[in-house]
Image (cartoon, rainbow, N blue to C red):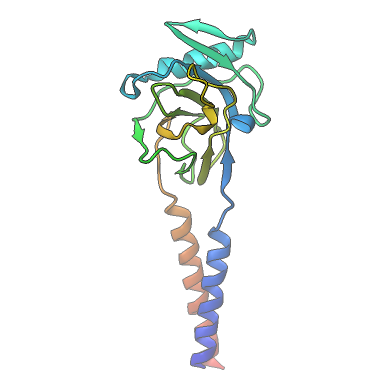
Length: 199
């Protein structure tokens, strides 16, 4: 009887792990891009107006625009909606990333984290990229595939991530749904245990 109970608990835990596991979405410029702007600015100086300028340039569908010394170059990723994209209501805090990785995982939480992600790919000869992440949830892998070279002839795609910002949201771990699934699994084990005990 004890072995059956252990087996049931193992099956329930396996089901929980399979249910809560979700494939990581790869977010890159080719697929989710809205556009880029440069020259690279001091990360602490980045505010929501830069994201909004990028959105406005994208929605105008008229090619690059220079605003306040920054050149905004729109790009529609394969999964980015066509103009008109919604405005960016706010920009969350600056998140610094150590060691300049070319790929970095970000947890958007169970409910997502707004419509936009702004990534700073290195500096001072780097570039900023805006990505449309509306509707994405859970863990994403942000990858650098930005084409072109900087003024020193270095490929932007070799620039590592130094900072990122989320528009209209923040990083909220996916705790609620996992706890709910755990509760269902434990309830199932309890019911199965009672049934086995009566047999």
